[in-house]
Image (tube, rainbow, N blue to C red):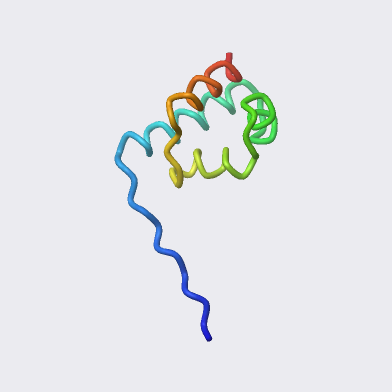
Length: 70
């Protein structure tokens, strides 16, 4: 039986803008995704999903990301 491929959910524009800004801020601070993940208490793969627009963070995670980014 063939494995079905999941369809990507189309996120709102704000999620795409958040993703781009998160990546921009992380890189401007010389951090890797793993560095940010450690400081924000999430996994590096979740940071990747956030930066690619594949996930929308809750307000509590936005607070942790902001603190981790200074």
